[in-house]
Length: 252
Image (cartoon, rainbow, N blue to C red; front, side, top):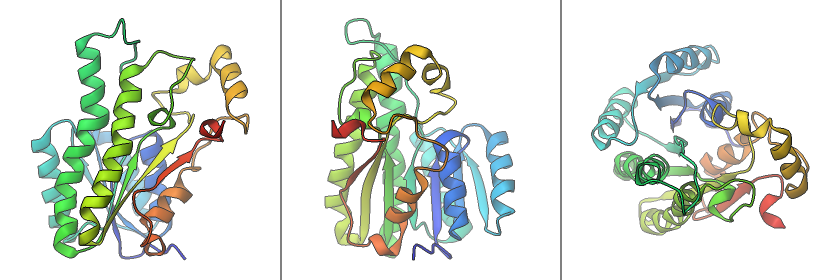
């Protein structure tokens, strides 16, 4: 089950963190990869690692907040492989502040990076999937797209990820007629370049232990199984699903 040999998987935000982890997970299932991010040197290093696993990998420099770059990346991916079977929208960042203090620039940056980019990338690659009447779209949202929190003020991040959650449902309904599914994964606390400084503090670790039933942070690779399942032929009847992988944070 879950053999992805012959499938072409596109991962945005692949240069580090969860995107890099899932890229390796898909490669392990036999998929060929298109990896996208702004930092080409990191993409090249990851591509070498992935090719050593016996699959093809094409790195493409792309700022997903710029529609013209996204459209160009989609054209490159289609030229390289002739199709796109799976899209993982993983790129993201945030500038955090509370609703009373957040600046327009902080708000716009977060919404553009975490929500608008998902639209740009889905539109570009979804049109390739439509040609072939097949596709799996997986949006990486956040458990913070489902609930609030009392540890940090980060209203724009909550808003953007909440938007991604309902964008997922809307796209699932719209694209079903083309045999394209769309689902979202909502990660909990995973250590990445963006989160490491916060998660390692004693105060946040104490907050995590009080709010996450499993009592620990997620570790590298623990998103892969969910993403691989949603990308697989076995998940053909699964669409519009919002899957938290959060140690139980959203169940209490």
